[in-house]
Length: 438
Image: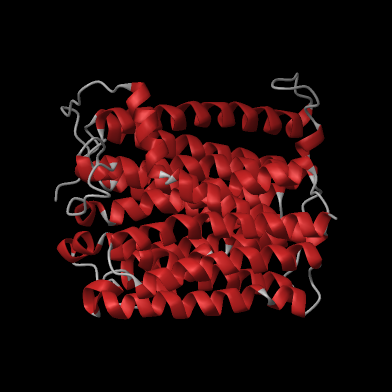
């Protein structure tokens, strides 16, 4: 591998590194001179003394850095769309740059709390590491002669939406919001709800995009997933990975800046759980992939509870268990219908490894356990009569569908179980919210 900064992209990366260095230098000068109040007007001012000049220098370097960073992002998505290192690394670098500016701004407005100061320092370290890595990678891999066909903006936006798995995101946001309402037994403030739901949507959507990047070759062998953007070739793997990473980074800083750190780290834990524990490791390793991996989808109620209350309590853990126990019968019902897909793709789902009869039995067993867990809330007096009646009716219907799956062969009953179980979880959490409000 030959290192050279002769390409325009590599030169732009180097200039961006130097501009960000000047920005950091200006910030340090402002801190040493106590110049935050020396320039009262925005964006420019008539500097007075060393502190004023330091503040003006910092602002000019910030503007220059932002322009270069955005130019770098544009050039990467224009000329490096197929490179699985340069495009994701550029996107992460740009996301970290604006995350650093965001944290720096809110820590000033909030009087420099210790948690934000630590986050600011860690983000700065990550930004510098990403910038240096990008310059080195650009010097080795960047090319100027790469040309790509023009993009259809509408189709590209549709593909980005598909990457996020919007139906799954919607279901996860219902459980997140229910966790908020149940936690405080009242409607959360509009701003708190907005930022929590936005951060949650970005976390779930980003995780879904990275999952599709990991499964892009596997998806080609499954009828249900063959038309996904990366599997179908409408989007390069680098683009899908970059989009997912950007959403995940944004989700963490949105949660940390506008909600609280507990919710932010719980959301981050959900991303790591889904991407690494499930997608990378468990999915192709064990027949228990859905059982263990179900914990990733069970974290959103914890995020909502922590966002509203700033802590985790026993009811939040019960909500986690409800979603955790719901996941296996829901996805095993789908796996029965799509058994041949999973077999072709080499995914060790339960019906592929142990057969449909065993899968149908496990669907019934886990459904019984799930319905039992839903009654912990009223038994422990965390909910009232409305939830109890709703859980009884909804659970009774779910048990009926599970019994049909157990006793009736064919895909029709399994498909009905899969479809109803989605509605079941949504309606159960709606019942939780209503019960908490009345």
